[in-house]
Image (cartoon, rainbow, N blue to C red; front, top):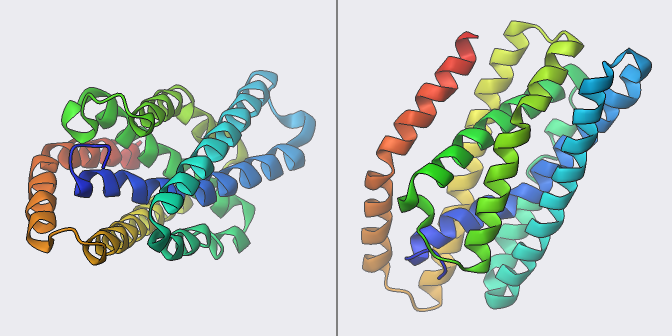
Length: 227
C-alpha cells in the first residue's frame, strides 16, 4: 500500500499494468507512420516524434519494472497482468489511419489524467514512495509531449469522423480495462486477507472524492471532440 489506501494504490497499479501494452502500441504505430511518411514529414515534427518515441520507450521500461515488483509482492497479480499485456492485440491489426487516431485519443486521455495527478493532491497524495515518484515523472512527460501524436494525425489527414470514432473507442477501452483490472487486483487483496467492508468503504470514498476530477476530465475531453 503506497498511496494511502489499498484501493487508491490498486487503481494506479491497474493503470500501470495496462501501460506497457499501450506504449508498445503507440511506439509501433508512430514508427510505422514515420517510416511510411519518409521525407514528407516536417523536420520539426519528425524530431518531436523521435523524442516522443524515446520517452515512450522509457515509460514502457519503467512500468515493466514497476509491474514486475507488483507481481513479486503479490503473485496473484500475475493473471491480471497477463490479461493487460494482451489488451491492445485486437486494435494492432487495424489500418494505420485508425491506429493513429486511437494513439492520439489515448495520449489525450493520458494527458487529462496526468494534469489531475499533478494538480490534485488527493489522487496521488504527497508521499515519496517509488511508485508516486514514477507517476509524477510520467505525468510531467505526458503533458510535455501529448501534442505530438495529435499533430502527426493531422499531418496524416485523418478525417474528423474517424477521429471522433477513435476517441469514443479509446474512452470505452480504457474505462473497461482499468475497471476490470482494478477489480481483479482488489479481489486479490481480499483473498489475501484485506477486509472487504474496508475496501468497499475506501473505494466509495475514492470515487466520490474523485468526481470533480472526472468532471474536469470530461470537460477537457469534450473540448477535444469539438475542435
